[in-house]
Image (cartoon, rainbow, N blue to C red; front, side, top):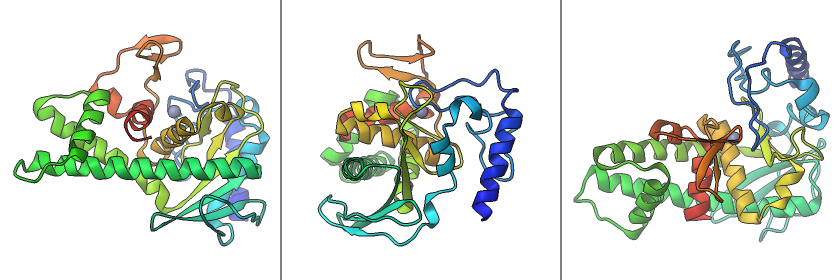
Length: 291
Ligand SMILES: [Zn+2]
């Protein structure tokens, strides 16, 4: 009941505040709002995105209902070899996926069984990518901290990935690696809990692939998400985890056709600190090197 009343309060707050947010910008990749609501934190919940969005226009009812959702739902179901067994409790579908010695916990709201099957594989691939990237980057970090430490091709791979996407040379590079490792650790933490995915039947921005509400851990996937190849879907899920678990923003979206970051239809130059704060940079780096 607590979740329900909190949800109602959020909905009311969102409606009250919906007229005062003209300067908030919509994330056209994901449907997330870019600027933090000027009112900041309400009731200890990070209101990034939610209050500054306009619920009447941008929060579809399915998404709203899902907000109180997943973490406390019933016991998971063991699934083997990527094949989900059907399970449903409390309106949600919980799956515990035993994978590579880890148990990954996922919940799916409003997803069809074929979507659940695809998402399960995409999430496993995302887990493998972030695990490998983090492990490599930590080895690179050890090597940079102590050059007598053994090097390895894994550290070289991490170095290439980070140089490609974040740049940085000389002494700055060590700091860059440290910062990237911090974000990767936070993103990997997502898999320590239960990841909630909600399959939306429509999104207010038809071009959006996925979006999140700040302070909530559910990732909402939009119909357009399914137009992407599976490995890109994994990368998009990691993009959203970087928002929710590492507090990244959307400073620019990578356009592979021009090799530029774009924002609001215009190219933007991102400096190192922008890149370190930019969800799409992690998405592209991981897609490029680890997916
Ligand atoms: Zn984003």
